[in-house]
Image (cartoon, rainbow, N blue to C red; front, side, top):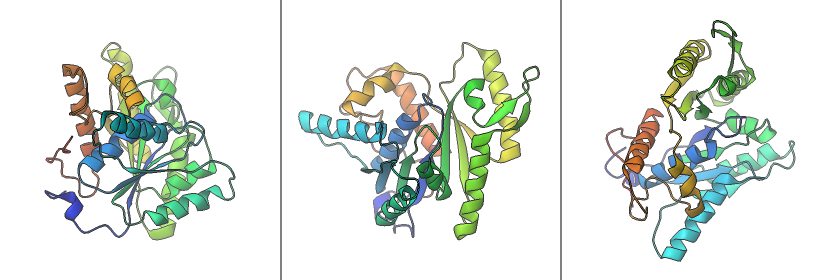
Length: 276
């Protein structure tokens, strides 16, 4: 990213960041929101597509953000947002394609997929440039992408979601020759169970070599993330965050490290987002 990302020439097509995980409680929507706002603060033109119309967590987050800004009479940067209902498997992918085409001139489009298998979710994976899969640091979540031996904890075989990503990569290559960077985030890392953390980490490293993803640290389990949602705030909204503490500083550092680790185009690892 240059000193002013917004002044750079726009990309030929927006870079699609797809948040995908079919298990709930992994921090997928919170991660999507923070990535989108971080990119917006950095000067990029960003759109967010919420494909989980039933919960609409990211869309609700942004509604809360607009309401907070109006009530407090403050200015908060925000990406554009669109919600695509999961109504008809035959027509839903076309609705997603139309929205992506409408935002083709944007720098980034962040897509939050439903926590279940759906035609919309598969369509999003098929057009992804970067797939981000947050997972809690447990073998319950690991089972989404790989199965392990009960005694040795060695990986036996990739699981259904890893196979889905593989299919999406093949579809993308057939469509335009593009590649998909798959990033697995280890969210909610705990220092209380070091043995489990080591075992999960070892299994992830083994599976990463077999199916081709990168493992990066995600966001820790912090109460502050749950407290931010009702006001629509993120850790980057320094000017309006109340009761700012060392916990906020640590969590903010995690967020910056996360976004940098995604290795997105035109993102300068040494240029932190300019928070309000």
